[in-house]
Every structure is written in structure tokens, then in C-alpha cells.
Image 1 (tube, rainbow, N blue to C red):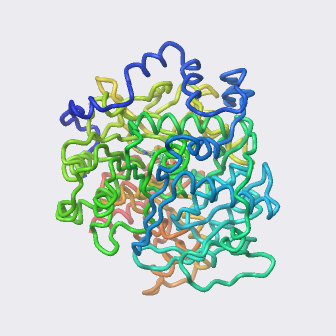
Image 2: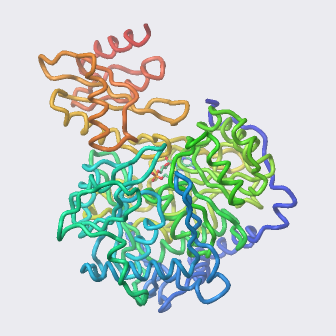
Amino acid sequence: MTKLFEETETYYASREFKKDASIFAADLYLDAKFGREKFWAKQAKHLDWIKPWHTILEWTPPDAKWFVGGTLNACYNCVDRHITGETRNKAAIIWEGERGDTRTLTYWDLYREVSKFANVLKSRGIKKGDTVAIYMPMIPEAIISMLACCRIGAIHTVVFGGFSADALNDRVQDSGAKLVITADGGFRKGNLIRLKDHCSHPSIVVKHAGCDVEMVEGKDLWYHELMQNASSDCPVEEMDAEDRLFILYTSGTTGKPKGIVHTTGGYMVGANRTTAWVFDLKPSDIYWCTADVGWITGHTYVVYGPLSNGATQLIYEGSPDYPQKDRFWKLIEKYGVTILYTAPTAIRTFMKWGTEWPAGCNLSSLRLLGSVGEPINPEAWLWYYTHIGQKKCPIVDTWWQTETGSIMIAPLPAHTPLKPGSATFTLPGIEADIIDNVLAITSPWPSMLRGIHNDPERFYSTYWQKWDGKYYYTSDGAKRDADGYFWLMGRVDDVMNISGHRIGTMEVESALVDYPQIAEAAVIGVEHAIKGQGIWAFVLLKDGVQVTDDLEATVKQHVCAKIGAIARPERIIFTRDLPKTRSGKIMRRLLRDIAEGRVLGDLTTLADSSIIQELKSQYDD
Ligand code: WT7
């Protein structure tokens, strides 16, 4: 991979792209400059409010309240307000399953389905303030479930369908969810992924895969049976701007994922506006964000952003190489996709597969490309630009986090000259700086997290303590060039970025030491050509345990069962000890030096430096 922060050419949007732009970026930047809070208040008027706010922002660091006194409903903004005008019969969701089955839901269809399911939830005793977990494949019911929750004021916590039973259980426990909405199964690479089997809580089950599932009487109910007699008349709940909209779990530096809390008003303003700005969204667009709803990208840029803007979007259930390696390009050709938002790891995979796959399809409908999840290396940027965008589509590289709720640093496509590998500048109304080589967000923004569920201390210590509660600590290393462009350099904490997904080293370590024969483990993220980073685990076995031929495979399988396949280690290295400081802290940095072939740094803080020398010579061979 080429290094980041290597200046290449600068790319400008074509005259044609500029001519058609619906967003006047210069006006936005100017407006924001004259008063950030007023600017956001003006932007918030793009949503439908039930009651207006009396105060734009109450900021008692680190606690922010936006649009205080205002009330609204997120589902109303995504659905109801589109069924009165021209968008009523517009496609909201064009869905294609991995096996080629298709469904289209207009805004009117969505309104009926969501209202019916909201009534179903009510009939199951779910009410305002309750939490509901959603554990689903990428099917329309995943979105219907999310919207039905917010319609009645329930808080959803979506758990990625690739997570294991244990991971689901942890999140259901921590969030206090009363019910799990799931499916019998889903499809990925032609394989059936059984979801209901992982779920031991009271559930509502969508029949999607058609596989046999065990339904426990009085505990598990079929979605389609409940929907049969449900009324499509369900009033929306009036929510305070600061009422919780959802909890989404993300990995941190401890073994336990944290439940990031987002509220209704500010989050919706961020989701709605950034979608319109960054994608320069127009009514005629066919928008496709390839993220799963189990991640924040799926929340903001599949559900709340596009739908609150009345967009038409494509949703695809499965894998990009099923039945062949051109599935994405076939979908773009078939549906005339105009905006594609995906991740660098996917782009590097496509590069590896070769240009013949996209070249065999007509991609001329595309007008804009997006990237998210990790820094995009200039090689991948150029390949995306040339072979997918055919040198006519700007690429928006979008930096943000689960915690920020919506995009923070990104170009506005008709306006910002692009430098491959840089997310460019903060969006209007967002202020950031670099302090001690780490990106800091220096003023509150509407879609900021409001806390960690049940853990205010961790909220403060993770994000605010560093700069005395004044600035938000992102944990991302960053630089700025002479033109003021931001260059994101990756995490500075013990969080890995595997294919654009956050996984904590400690999380994998806890899964490893849970294996009966393992005494200790140290996990690091090591540069990986496709995934960005891959997981390497240094493992210390208990006394007397012998390394057998199948032990490595069994240990890897154990991690998958504890967390999910995304956390599968690339390598397990059995070692007689781990490099630790005298106070017992594992020196992961030294392990990374070894794995990535660097000269070893300072070893004087180690309790016993012989182990690191030993590992090093083992590696140099
Ligand atoms: C972390 C957040 C936000 C949606 C997807 C991931 C990294 C994300 C970029 C980008 C450089 C990026 C950061 C960040 N990241 N997008 N465009 N350039 N780095 O959400 O799981 O909360 O992870 O992903 O390290 O902190 P997430």
C-alpha cells in the first residue's frame, strides 16, 4: 500500500457536475461562520418539528442539549412527511436479495408497513422509553423495525447480524432490551446464516430464509402472523429533542463494548443535513450505501439520512462476489445507481479481483462516489476514481465515528478540490483542530453522542478528560497540510480497524483467555493488504498444555463463536511469555514492531526483554 499523506494531484469537479449541483457550499460555509448555533438552528428547519425549541444549545461540558424544548418524531420525518406530496409513490427502498429476489417499497408502502409493525410492537407491550434489540439480515424489515420503534418512542439497539450469540446476549443484557426482532436467517455468499438460533430472548421472527427454526410457545412469534391483523393506523409519539433515539454498541479499549447513546433532534439534524450536503442529493438520484444497518453508517446513511430526505435507495442483502465478482456493478447497471457509498476495504478487494468485472458493466449512471470506515490509500482512491467513477465522479472521503453520529470531515463535491487520501475539511458548523497529533472536535455539534449507556464515568474519561472537558477526543491521529487539509492517520488507542470495523484488542483478548487452555493473550492489528488491518494474537498456553496441529484453528473458531467472524484472527502465535512493563502492562507496540518488521524501539521499560528478542529472531527467520 502506498503511504498516506503523500501528495499527489488535486482533483476538481467537472463543470457539468458543478452546473447540476443543488448544494451551494460557499453559502453554507459563510452562514456557519457568522454564528454556528444560528446556522444549525436554520438547518434544523429542514426537519418537521411538532413544537419549536426555545434554546438552540445548552452546553455544560461535556453535556450538550440541542434544540431544547423542541419536539418531533424521527419516523414522521422519514416517512409520514413524504406521503402527502410528490414523494408519496416514489420508491423509498429498492431491495435485492442475494438470490436475486426483489422488492420495492414506495414511501406509501413504507408508511403502511411501519405503522402496522408499530402497532404490533405496542400489542407486545412495548411503549415509549422501552428498548428493543434488532438482529437482522439486510432486508426491508430491518429498516421497518427501526422506524416502527421510533414511531412509538421505543429505543432501538441494532446488533450486526454477523455478531455471535454471545455478542447479541451481552448487548441485550447491557441495554435492557425487552424484545429481539430477528429473522430465521439470511444469505451471504450463498450460505444460510441462521440468526434466530442465536437468540434466546423473547422474539419476533421474520420469515426470510425459509429455514426451520425452533419457536418457543409464548416467547417467540412470527412477524408475518402478527402483521396479518395489525392496523395501519398508528399515531406518532411526540418526542423531546433530547429523548433517546437509539443505542449502538461499539468497541473501545476495554473488553466490553460501549453503548453509544444518540438522541432524536440533534441526531436527525446531523443525519438529514450531511446526507443532503455530502452526497449533493437530488430527487432523481438512486442512492446506494453498501453498509449494514448493524453499523452507524447503516443507521445514518441507510435509514435516517436518506429517508428523511425522501431519497430513493438501493439495498442489497448479500455479498459482492455472489454469484460472481461483478454483482455490485450488475446492480449499479440494473438500477441506474447514481451515488455509491462504500468502504476502502471493498475497493481494495475489487482491485484484487481485476478491472474486467466493472469493465463488463455499464456504470455510466454513476455521478458521485463515497468512501468511509478508514483512511483510503491513494492507490485505492485512484482505482475507484478511474475504474468505477470513469474519471467523472468526485469521491467524497468521509471521516466520522459512531460517536459523532454523522459525517464531520468531508468535501462538498461540487466545491472542494480533492486530494486522494485526505477527507479534506470540516463540514459547515463543525470545528476541529489537531492537538498533540490527535484530532480534536473543538465545539459541540448536534449529532454528538449524549453518553455511554449506564456509564457516565467512561463517557467522561474516554472522550473528554484528556482536554479538561473542553474538547472531544477522537482517538484518531491526524495532520494538516499547508492548504489546511485534514489527513486522518488511524487510531492512536488500542482499537483495531478491521475492514472498516472497530474491534478492541482487549475484546479479542478476553475472548481468547476465555478458552480453557489459554493463560494469557496479547492482540495487535497488523497491516493487511485488503482489510487495512488483520488480527494477530500472541497466546500463552497454561502450564503443561501442548500445541497440537489443530489448536490454532480451534482457537480461531473460539474467537468467532465469542464475537463473530469479523474478529477471526489471521494468525495465532504461541509464545512462552508476553512482553510486559514492570507494572504488568502488555507492550503491544513492540509486538506490532515485530509483526511489521520494524527495528525494535526502546526496551528498557520491559520487565524481561529476552522474550521480545526471542520473538524478534523467530520472526526475522
Ligand atoms: C473510526 C470510527 C464512521 C463510519 C464507519 C466507522 C475510522 C472512519 C474514516 C475516514 C479515516 C476513518 C476512524 C474513526 N474512520 N472513516 N474517512 N478516514 N479514518 O465507524 O466503527 O465508529 O469507527 O473509523 O479511525 O475513529 P466506527
